[in-house]
Length: 377
Ligand code: SF4
Image (cartoon, rainbow, N blue to C red):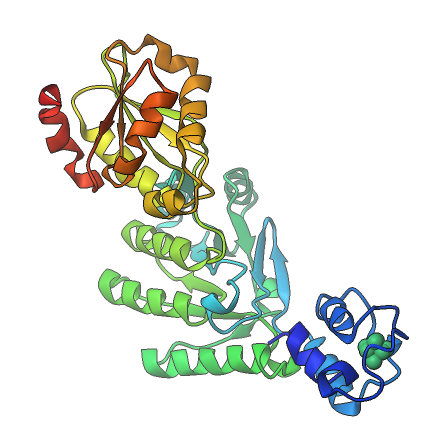
C-alpha cells in the first residue's frame, strides 16, 4: 500500500508534537504540508532534518515497485497496486488471449472466427485482446494486427509469472498470495504480472473458472480454445471490475434518437448516468413509435442523486432542450421526465413554457405501459 499523508505526518515532529514541529526548514509552512507533498511524491524526504529511521524505512519501502507493467502492443499488462478494487481502482484489465497454431488442421477456421469475433457492450465494441500464436505466419499476423489483436509469444511470457491451473481453490490461493506479496509486501520476487493457461472446451466450467481468475488475480488468461459465448461473458464481467469506483460511468449529454423519430415522436429526459441511459434507451428501442431521449450533464449521477446534489435542475434541463434544434420539429411538445423528478415539474414547466412537462415512471421497465396510456395524460 502507498504511504498516505496522515501516515507520514504522524511520524514527523508535527505529528509527534515535539519542539521541532513546523520549523519550516523543509520549505513548507507546516509538517502537514510537507507530509502531503511527500505522499504525492512532490518533494524529497531528505529536506526534513528531523526525519526518524522508522519514517525513512517506510518511505523507502513505499517506493519499491509493486507489480510491474508490461506493454503488449496497445495493451498494458499488470501494474496493479491494490488488493481490492474499492481501495482505489484496478488499473489494467486482465488480457484474454486465444491459442492459435498455424500447423493445426483447424487453423484457417479458428483464425477466421478470431478475426470476426466482436461484441457490443455499453455502447462500445470489443474484440479478442491477443492471440498466443504458435508457428506464426506473416499473413495471419498482419490480418490480426489490422484488427487490433495483439500477438503474444513465449518471449513475452518469459517476463511474466505462470500460475498453473490445478484446482480452483489452490489456483486462487496461489494467485492471491502472489498479488499480496507484490502489492502489500512489495516483494520483488513476486512483482511480475501473472498468467494462467486454461484448457478444454466445457463452456460452463471454463466460464466459472475464468470469472474467478479475473476477479482474483490473473493479469492474463490464455485459452486453448475459442468459445464466443465464454468471451462475451467474461468481457462483460471485466467491464464491471476494471472501472474506477470513484468515477461514475456516464454517457455524453445530448439528444439521442430511437426508431427514426419524426414530428410525432415522444421526448423523454433523464440524467447522464450510464445505467439510467441504458435502462431507458433499452425500453425506447423496443417501442413501436419513434422517440428522443434528452440526456442532461449530471456528472454521471443517477436521477435521485443528481436531483439531491442540484446536478439536475430546471435550468440545466431546459438548457439542453433549448440547445437542441432537432426537438423543434416535434409537434406534441411533451417532455416526459422521470417519476423521481416529479418535484421538478413545476419549475421545469416555467423554464420551458412551450412544452408540456409530463411526469413519467419511476422505473424504466414501466415505460412501455406508460406510453400505451399516454393519450390519457
Ligand atoms: Fe516539519 Fe518541515 Fe520542520 Fe521537518 S523540516 S519538522 S517537516 S516543518
